[in-house]
Image (cartoon, rainbow, N blue to C red; front, side):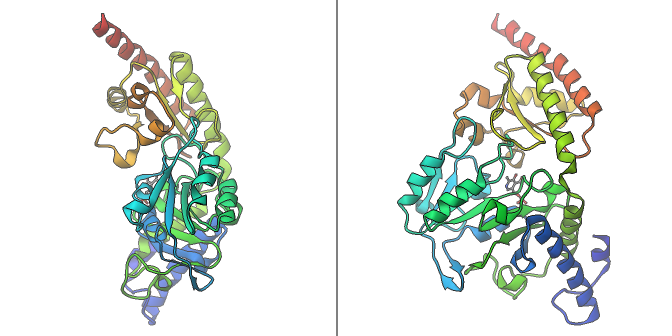
Length: 362
Ligand code: PLP
């Protein structure tokens, strides 16, 4: 990133200064392509996953050089708001698909729903940002392709935690974000498999990014994104799973009435979402913060406003539990001592919050 910031050229210029910036961008493109098992020509850099998803979710798609417009978009009920917005589909042509109580897409409901569309597009996330529940994407891809559909996957939570090879997933279009794998904020990519193209770019102007995204590239952020992919490997995943499991055992030992959302489903190694009847998420989060522990309620992307989590609600969780939903994320730098500190804090905190509540009730 420092190298990119020190360069003054524009990557579209033919002079040496421009070519130096181009080299950094193309190196990053190779790194992101490698991470996703894609060809470099199928990686379009954007300002983040939200923009990549806006670019992807459009009725105007081209497949193998032919216009193949999509007539309906189907999204799961637990998607990130960027996908739930429906992208560039008209409001009336977007349908939401249910999930099971484990937070997994209801596959018979998907099959049934897309049968009603002539050319469906489906968007399902690889792993949920609140619960960590992983979707059976390759199975979903088979169902979608059997119905002549196109599958977009928001894979933001995957890289560095689980395998994200686009061919193995069977996805056609995939959104990824730099800052979820340790890179800078403000960079992301839309990755394509095969020859699917967006016929109407979201940002029009110059011919950058093979005409898929106009505007001078954010070379420093893109370089940082590439660098992050180079260090994001799955070797920390096993260690993170062990720490996460210890965290959950500690929580349910201190508060046996705790509910871990999606506990029976395959999950990311680093995420846990839980609630304890009678403990308000806002109160607990403030107390955690005072102890130097950053915990989120609902989705961090929308925190600041206290909103019932649409993810836990879609999983059919009791509304009182949904209000108490907290999310803890571990990272490759999380240590045993961090987990000990969390659990020691929780032991004191949960006891006093529950006592406070029973005092009020009495
Ligand atoms: N999708 C998921 C699952 C996310 O968790 C996020 C951000 O937290 C996004 C999309 C949006 O990504 P970006 O911030 O790069 O636009």
